[in-house]
Structure formats: structure tokens, C-alpha cells
Length: 394
Length: 176
Image (tube, rainbow over the protein chains, first blue to last red):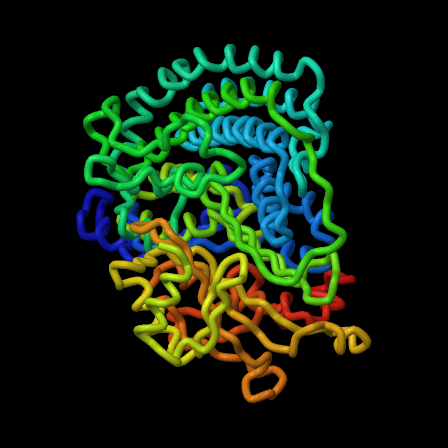
């Protein structure tokens, strides 16, 4: 009789064929209802196919059945972590179609609010990324700070997640009295906290070994997949002549051209020696540095606010004109585009509303990034793409 | 580079194969036929002056007024448009290309109109075209895997068509 130690029997018991593993849609590290079908050879991924649509509500169909302004609350529910930026993108598209002029005061408020939401969104991105990689504490720190931003938003518009505050023609209400003071106090509180996050995550030895040289995205692939936001910027290299690819810089909207900030493009002198441009660590670090730039933008906005001319909202036209307009804005996750087509018959309901999601384009790279990685690297790669399923499925 | 310059470059190269151009629109565009689409898009991508290496958005637009009372005043004839929004990473400019199609191929209801796929030129076209096929109902010939992407595989119809009828039930789930 063969014993357990007999090597031939052990050989025959090991199954060496490829295996299909379902990851999600209820997996905690897939950020919402993303389902990945992984074809694995042992621990190594040979194919990772994302399946989405679990959160699909056909917002585009709703958009062509309601008036332009009624659609604002639906844009909140696309990227629900950056609802203000979604509102802004759609409002700008309708304003471009109507040829509206936005008063300076409304533009300043928009910049302050959009950048504040970018901070909140990147904080969640950072916290949940830590969670994916098995550390719980940064999540708590991130949500402590995000809670304060939500309190500020609640004062402005009454809501904590789906704001519908930035609207067509400007913003819904002026800032409440004393709010700018409280925002300044919050920014002063936040600035020294950034260093804490770096200690907790960015320079953490375990975090660096989980993210450095993992999921390397070359620039040509990022461009062919129309990637944007931190995903694309993390793969650029300033020393080889890549531009400051940030829509706030290259196509300034809402008066961003007058603000002093920089687009975050590698290389970073403080990068750990084992990391390379385009890996998960760089994508994460781009987000962290963008928080600092957003703080700078908020402070500049606060300085401009008391002297800004005009009101917080321009008058709306009676109906949408015929024609079409496509606007992309720099949202926390990349370039979110809205394409609005007006009807030739004078009507306030658009003929077509198209939302182009940045996470959708970024996620399309999932297969190419995951191929050849270990199963344990999947949370690191998918987390570094920083997807929000509400935006992908719409 | 301004849109007028882009259009004049295309005019020089392709002449009357550029079927229509609109410089007054908010985003100036040209209209091309489906047969010329791949060649013109390859030129848009590879010419150094144009350099449109990012295909940011592909949208299908269904021009149809389903209400017969309003159809006379709608201001357009029923047709389908596929709109390609390009952006150049090198030159930081944008451009729009449109393809105009009949709503149904050969006017046979149920036969999807056909456009050649751009998946061989831009990797992202794979997913964008799957979404347009899924929601608007345009068939992209030469696409490596033209399946539904947002809706489930057994879904019937294309919801962003104006004459789409909402299902009464789906696997025992009541609609409407």
C-alpha cells in the first residue's frame, strides 16, 4: 500500500489545470458591485474579466425624459463620493449649450466646493485603499476628516452625500454667514494631518511592498485606453517631457486659469527606491499630493470670495437651444464628460444626455494590469484604479 | 490648433469624402460615411499635426420623435448618429467626428445599422462600442467581442432607442 509520503500519489492529487475564480460582486475589496472573473493558473492570473452593470439605472434614459435642471440630482448618484464634481460637469455642459455667462462669485464658490469635494473623495480613496491592503487605521483617520467636510457641506446645502448644490447657472444658494471662517479653520486643521497619512501609509514598509512595482501601467497603454486623472498622471514622467495633463491646467474652466496650483506629475524625489513610475504606489501618491493642491485652491478661493462680483446664480433660459455640447471636467477619478443634445423644437427636455465615465475607461485596463499578477495583488491593483461603480454603471 | 485648421487639413487630404462639416457648432464636427470612418480616424491618430490619440467618448444618438402628433414639428428626420469625441494628448486639442446612419439597416425593423469598429486603432473603443451596441443598438463590424456590457446578456431591445418599450417583466420581476 502506498503511504502518504509516496511522491507519485501527491503528484497525481494536485490539479494543475486552470481554474475560474469569481471575485465579487459582494467581495469587500472590489469597491461596490464589481464582479471579476479570474482565470488562474495556481496563484497567477492569466485573465481578469470585469463584469459590471449591477448598479445600472440607465441614467441616460432618465436624462432624456426630464428637464435639464431635473437631471442634476441624478448626476449626484453617479460618482456619489464626488457628487459636487458631477453636478459641476453636467451644469457646465448645459451652460455651454445655452451659451450662458456665469457670475464671478458663483465661479469662486464652485471652485471652493469642487476642491473640497476632491479632498473628501481622495480621503475615502486613501482610507479604503488601506482597507484593501489589510490596514484598518487609515480608514478611521480618513473618515474623521471627511466627516468635517460633510458637516461643512451640510451647512451649505442640507445634504451629506447627494448635494445637488452646484446647479445650472451657478450654485443653489450663497454660502452661509461664518462658513468661510469655519472652512479656514478646517483647512488649518487638515494641513498637518497629511503628514500623519504619509507615516501611516505612504512610507509604511508593508504598504510599499504591497504597491511598489505592482500593476505597472505604461504611458502608451494609458493613452490608448483614454485613461485620465491620477491613473494617467501616475504613468507620466515630467523629465521625459510629458505635459501637466490636468484639464484644470490645459482647458481651464470655472476660472481655474487664474489660480496658482500645480498638476501632479511624477517623478517624485520621495518615492521609495523599489517603486517605478506607473505602479500602484505612484497612483496612490498622486492622489495624496492632489489633496495638498486642493487645499491651496480652497484657500485661494476663500481669498477671492469676499470681493467676487455678481450673484451666486445667473438666470436660466426658458428652454434649451438646438445643438449639442460636450464638456469634460477634471473630477477626482479622471475626466468626466457630459454630452447634451438639445431639441430643435423649443423644449426644456434634452434629446439626449450622455455621461462618459472616467472610471469606465480606467477599469477597461483591469485585464491588462492584472495579467501575470498574483491573486493577492488584485485588491492592490483594483484599489489603485479607485473606481466608483455608480459612475461606471450609471 | 483650431477646429477650422483641423477641418481644412481633413479637407485637403480627403476632399469630398468629408460629407459635411459644421464650424458654427459648439464643438465643430465633420460627418463621414461608415466606409471611410476607419481610414479617416487612422489619419486623425497618426498625422503629427492632428495626433488624436485618445478616443474619449463614443455616443449613439437616436433622432426620432415617437409621438406622431409632435413628429411634424420635431425638426429632424428619423436617423441615428454615432458621435466620436477625440482628444489629443500630444497637441491638447479636441475634435468631433460623426457618422450618420439609418435607424435600421435597409429599413428593416430589427436589423441593426452597421459601422466599422475602431477597436483596432484605440483600445478603449472595445468597451465604448460595446456600450453603444448595448444601449443604442448599433452593430460594430469587426469588433472582437461585441456583447452587452451594462445590461444582462438575455436582455431584449436597446433602451436608448426612442421607440424602446419597457418590459412588463424580467425573470419574474414586475416592470412598469
